Image 1 (tube, rainbow, N blue to C red):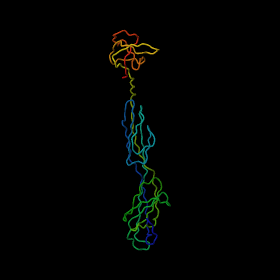
Image 2 (image 1 turned 135 degrees about the vertical axis):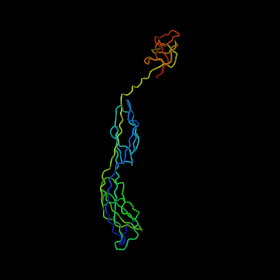
Image 3 (image 1 turned 90 degrees about the horizontal axis):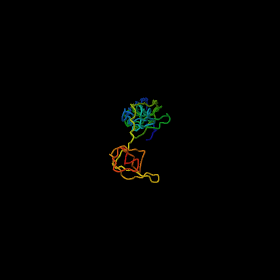
Image 4 (image 1 turned 90 degrees about the vertical axis):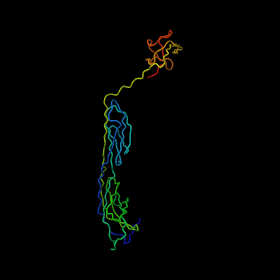
Length: 269
């Protein structure tokens, strides 16, 4: 677009002002896979914001900067914890209003007005952002996505030839800091963790063997009897890869054992 300085198009324009709209807080949703457990729990937190927040920060049982929505698996806890997510929305807005011109500066009627252009920025001497208003009847418009701070506004009139007037007077408005909202989820842990069961060796073969010693190493010998499946085995006494000592009273002997201890195939259960 070009700015025409010919007298017919340097028409007067008066900016009435800019009204800042305080940013309102959105909604934070934060949930956990479970909010109570006995002994321990591995929390999985899921969250979202509406409208999409500019930033979110975790506190309490977790920490760090978070996206506006997501899901995270946290470390297992054995005591009650609280998890908080605080989010902020920093995009303010301002309504700019003006009085439109009706004549050119030489007094002739203005008959081909087609719209306006709002110029704005964070400095009165650097209005480096623009917003088109393609409506000759418009007398106000909302400028959005304004961060916290003081903003300056001017308006130009635009005719059907896309010729623009000079800037209007400048109005300014301060956008306050962003609004925030927080959500907390509490997870209650009661009781004590259930003890981790210790794997037990049990017989998985009915055959029982004696053993012989060769070069100070126990070597599986001959079958000397049988034993029921599922009997307990002694993991402190092993012969070969998977034979462990079994209780002699559990064995039905079919021949004399050459060793005091006898073994059978055992696995952990």
